[in-house]
Length: 624
Image (cartoon, rainbow, N blue to C red; front, side, top):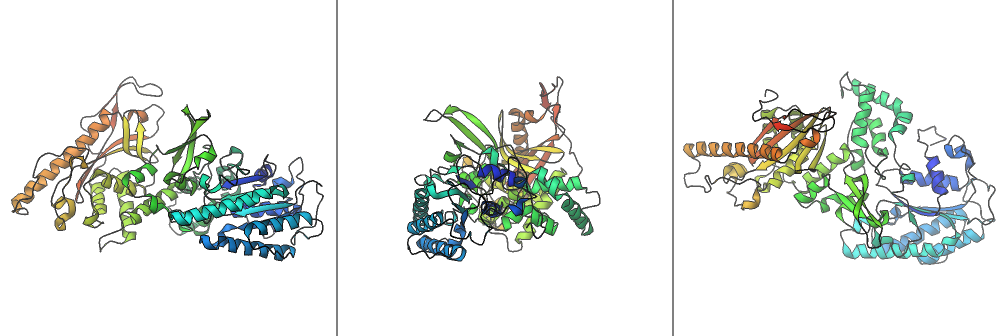
């Protein structure tokens, strides 16, 4: 990269801090495609003593001067071993023997992983002065008592995720990795640096063998070591933003009113938002590079290596809603115990689908008397939000009608979001019904959660950020949508009605329990008569459905009013307009949407209103 004049972001100041860290043996975990391999490549060059490469970098210019002592470096990736536990050891032994011969001219004779590693490190350590440094820079000044070998391991958990849902293979993988790190511990006295990177770290995988390695993944000093900060984007990539804007205008992807600052804001919305200390936001590097190449906002991170595990964890509406909720959290006494168990949310966090938004302390203490930290999790950005929405479509709502394809469904979502953002009521409800009807009637469920899930999924394709089950003083808001200039508090009500409304004319009547809806269903037409379908019956059905739709709207607004959902967002410094939204659903062919504004009464304080009331009636904000 340096010799070819390629663009890079200088992270060597943080790397210097890592190499001077109190423990020379460290774990660093980040989601895939965040630059971990490039980080190890940079560290390898530094540890080989290649000072000439770093004259223009911070590590080559900071005082006191970094010594650049040369070491033998063993660098390899577990990703080349495959995912079959039966072949791990054989493949790793072959890889180490290849490194030993190609770089150092050593012939290793051991057949097991423990013996091979011991033989390689012992040989390099004992013969430091006589073995060339693997085609590296000539030896520089070095300390006599400094361990002479550095070990850099990439993708340390590569075999863990593919086997996470197979208990037998998972245990074999854990046993192998535990034995491997036990071997490393035995030769740690000869290792100058041991730096291990990966995606996931679980206690079952490392607790008995690698307790000599520090986990720096959530250390604030290293929160910016991978990925880009907003300051780095402005400093290093602004010309690329200008170039992309010109291309996008030429291709008519954006209109002429788009500015560099607006485009930058969109980049941040799409690809920023990861954080490992709850404070410093980090932008995904692979997504940014792909955007600058294609000049189009897409799910680059997700498309370049989906881990394939998300569908296994999304098996109910409750689990799906929790992912989009502001209530998702993991409690632990420290970062290591945060990863103690293999749970859906620890996996989703470590693989990059959730990130830490803030860290607080619980009032309770752990058994050892230490404070319990609460790691509050949230979806990092729009790219991941849309990826999760698509995943739920494929894993749960996978059966579309014959005349609807996947791309057409996404277009319907986007159309609904556009109408919804403009508060066009009749257009929004027609678009919503079109989405409902996109799926086979056999999938439709007589449950409010089913329709809330579909609406949540659709709103993931909006220009704003959607959150589920937002906690306020009076309870949990169903859906919360924050747009550029508006805040929408959304309550969804479902009232089951047997007959054609549940599955159109090809449906069979569905039985439902009283628990299927949060609203009581009036005792009207609860059975289908032999004459069902006549003109008179259809007229009666239409009236009944209309009454149920109106009931759902009233119930939704009454709940918003009674529980004070809007109070939290009605304060003097709030620059966005607050809208109350009621969504009423009777079946896959019948939905109604109403928008209203809360009315603020007298006595508005500087930060929070003292008195407020809802208007009893509010006209449609935009004529449909």
